[in-house]
Length: 260
Image (cartoon, rainbow, N blue to C red; front, side, top):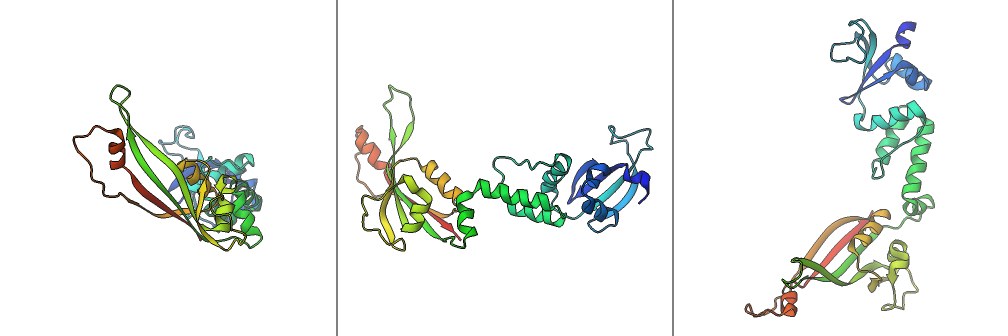
């Protein structure tokens, strides 16, 4: 590649996502720059700045390199940001660690690969603790609860409110303890010395479904199915009793989670 091209702007089309950077940025990682130069990771050509590139245009004569790379364009933004400032910056809800790790390996960015692994370890410490020592347990956990929607008198703010008294936990004892830890109440099933035993009598010491769902997600579980059942109750349609009204909306719900 000519020396003047090495100092020019380069346009990267990565999987349909276009990025502009400088050859100097890519050259800070010699392996990537060399692979782009010799066409190992993409098809490269020389072009001129078009009128739709006003920030780079200089009377239509500014040369730049154009390269197409058949990789994940969405994730390449994190690769490019790392090459610019040597920091791995990801959003709080980032989930595609495995895919990003594969992209870093493809571009032969070993330091970035190590940082991705470390970042993933810090984000899901409990899951990776079991993976590292080969003792990761797979299985199912079922959350079961009875819930009703209770109405408020018309003299107050109108609306319905969820009424939930207890969240039961069903599954292998070792999994239930690993996931919920201090949240788990074992008083109704005290004979659980063996962690291989299954239980249907444990419950959580709080009634927040969302808190329980978050804990399951942190431990690597995913929802596979849920169901609900409402008992048939004879009611007087002319009654204004709040107890009868609440009974009408009383139903049983189960959520089944799995970790492969």
